[in-house]
Every structure is written in C-alpha cells, then in structure tokens.
Length: 74
Picture 1 (cartoon, rainbow, N blue to C red):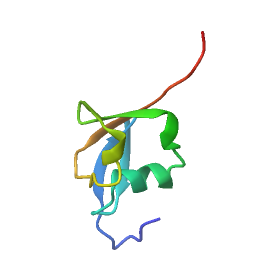
Picture 2 (spheres, rainbow, N blue to C red):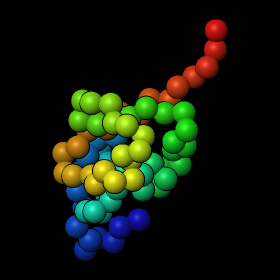
Picture 3 (spheres, one colour):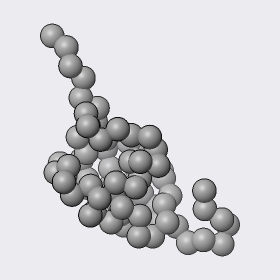
Picture 4 (cartoon, rainbow, N blue to C red):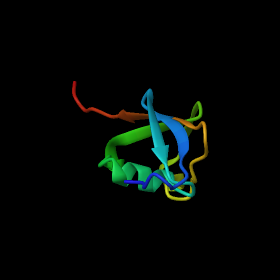
C-alpha cells in the first residue's frame, strides 16, 4: 500500500481505476493482485501483449489493461 506522500500513476485494470507506484511492471501488478499468469491473456492499450513481455512492460499513467482468463470446456 502506498503512503499518502508517495506519487502514483493512474491506470485502468478491467474497467476499474487503479493506482500504482511509478516504475511498476505489468508482472508486478499481476502478482500484487494475485493474478495467475498461466491461463490469462492481457490486452494492453488495445493490443494483446505477449506473455514474455509482462515483466519488462513498465506501466504508465493512463494505461488501459484488460485481463481475460481462459476457461477450458466443451
């Protein structure tokens, strides 16, 4: 949790406003929110982001993220 003095950036995660500390990676955001990477796809600012880029993608103010969980079935 951030202190009141700490600067944050605002983004949208699954339609909800979210704030993170500048320099936060997408991978850290997923981990902090308990999102298991194995069965998801992420739309990052309108484009599907390859899984190998989650940890290297640094979030920025105004980013829009949609996390979609894949469900098996028939």
